[in-house]
Length: 259
Image (cartoon, rainbow, N blue to C red; front, side, top):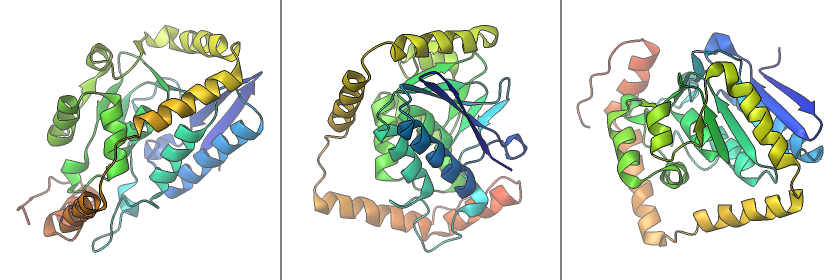
């Protein structure tokens, strides 16, 4: 059974996350289907891609499939993590990607949404970055995605508290483009995608790539990168990391001890 649906209407493609039983958790299987769908959009010259879940969902995506994270001793969110490939696929797609968001967006799914070019959300949408609840150290490229989406102080609040930010506040902070009532959001996104699709696709793809490169133009010395990796290793080798994963699987509150 497919976990993702892809539909085309002229030059506009719509990719729908379609595993409600698991709240569209970003499992390896679902991510692989998403990457394949994005590749198909590129090969069929889609001028705009809409990324969404089923209409009216309470959870857009629950983020990483925690059951697939390594139990310890190995980087849980390394360069080759499936979500890294997915985010790069969104960022490198020549066509703009519009995230249509209803319901909660958790953990790694926030990074996926923030990697999209435009974000349109219903009033029910919330955004929560939750690695601190699991004892997971987020990776450098993921941090950059968050820091490109909003100010450093807001990133810190989201990461340190792991509490959700409402769509209204996210719009006010410039994290998302528009908040639109659920009854109107599909028509709004359709009209936005139609406007984009009428413009020069080559011009848009080049400007998107220029902005991607400029947004990532933050040099880090090898020494600093090695320090970051060493700090992350301390976390994923810790008892707290193992406790966070186990507590999530057992559906209980974790007992973090700081080592």
